[in-house]
Image (cartoon, rainbow, N blue to C red; front, side, top):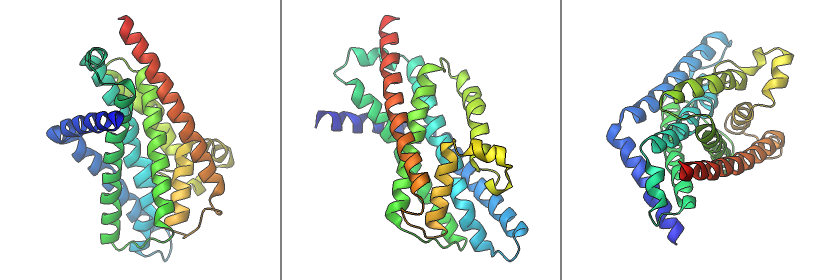
Length: 258
């Protein structure tokens, strides 16, 4: 129970700080909502005989896992790790009874809570605009959780290994993130891609997040129909958790020596 209480305490502290600032939470909501509206209207205008409600349904997967989760979970995790280092929180951690495992899990839990909140906002807005979703809610939830795990784990890797100051966060997320978002189909449908880009896209976890979620909530498909996407996400999520944990432990060792 010790780890559980410590994890909850760390997550609460991070969430309380975000709520007090409010600006980040508001912007993390505005960006995906704007993407949902823009992509939905584009789909409705460019796809013949596509109702506006169906257009918004089709725009939900890229707007949610391709945009919202990316910036809140990956960008947020990078920013949290860097700010904690600059504020000397890790130094204080070494002289407190709080374990490094609880700290790691607390950051993960905080950004997972933010992502779940974004998902509720996005689905509520889409339904309000007339969208109708199909498929298994449980399978949809599992895909969303795998996406969150992937982003947060990757955020730990980037934040601990490549970012040293707050100023590094924006450039780091932009350099790695924007190409991944475009290649994953977050801004442009993948059926517009040439075959050479499609081959690269299949190595991109964002592509598999969007395709898997789209197949479930729009086409109503089950686990067998998305086995390739699901398997890729499951494997990548495990790799990111392992890589994020090892990167975090290495950062702690470096901080102890400074």
